[in-house]
Length: 551
Ligand code: GLN
Image (cartoon, rainbow, N blue to C red; front, side, top):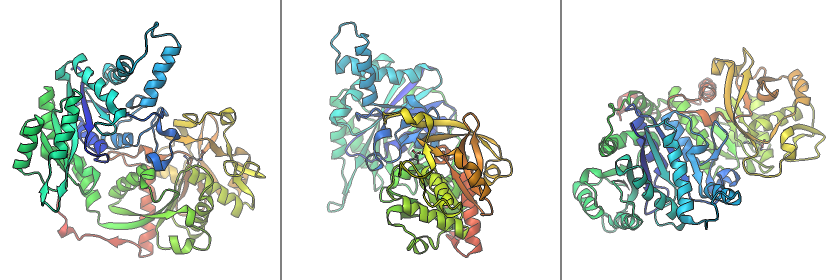
């Protein structure tokens, strides 16, 4: 079958959940036996989001091949369970970078290089390259931003042209819009949708299906009105109501018939969707029997998108353990030795988050000391692991001035230091140790028990590493190095002997946790936290079984 392209645009406002709709549609099509991938086109001028701070952009999602990408790619992977790569995220910066590089090389043979056709051609070639790889039946193309934005125009134009290039039957345009409820009028209003559709029509891209975000159900008369004014069939007006969790959205979309309409319009032959496991998972996430509290200590607790994959990993690991993880957000900026007992007293697990720079480090160190001394299950990720090692060096090995050269370049005991190859790097974008690397785990360690294997691959994003010069000293004092990158002998995992569950990892397990395969470290961490909680009467029982209703 020729690859089919589904363009997904958004109208009226941002934050309608385009990424979740794309992931949900992708999942529904994939469970029908189709080979699906999702590509995100981002209209900003950064070459990738790697240089943006978390307030601007939320989490930077790193793919297997080391691309720093939009957090929506995390949703794609969590829903579909298949890895994305560099080609799945394209930005305006990347497009211009490639076009200008070609221009400098003389590739345009004397032409004037322009938005149309050169920029639009470059966009199309990046979309078509996925289709031409032969790996997918369906490519869902999510266009970032809102229809009408100046910076989005070349993308819409490129999609308009693509419809002709690959044939109309091979493309579909889905528009996500908002149908707001006006309390004073007591009505759902269709006008913003009409205007949004009008705008996209003016740009030459007619929507085939409208997905309407609404707070109240759309009755038949509203659906008819939208259909009539927006030139689609009644069945192509799909309601997308608020869901209990993002994982319920595929089920709501199926009820509305989104995948059925897509298949019909694209003339695809596909099997029936097989959602048994997904439904089981949604049920486990929505109606867990128990609840435990785990602290997430980080700098961006007021901007939780910065830790999106960690939050989702906890949901998935919670479902496996039949408990909801209630995340207690603890700002590392405000945490210190004097208030740590008060702030972390009632939690059953402590996660110290990844991050960059010296702000909040003392708070993170206080959290590590508390977890280590009180025997509270502890997971340190990337910077969190580096903090764990600094804390251990200072308070157990007696190296009072141990530090990372990231925060104190002249420290006497650089227990965390810049990686060798990083020392000559000056550019900031795309130059960290990025992507998937091998790790060999020590047999008999807590981590090996969690993974059930000794050879793993995990994703990285860092410049600093544990300084091998101090390894023996750490080991002698009870901090074991239980995971090592075999090619370069880099410390990837540490554990503390005698502690019930204390693991620091240089990589990001949260980036590989999916619904189909919740990450073993998170599953094991939540299990340990649950055990800790039940021994101390810290487990909350939630809804009694007879009050659960199936989704
Ligand atoms: N700032 C640390 C480093 O670059 C940790 C990075 C992270 O937590 N992702 O090594």
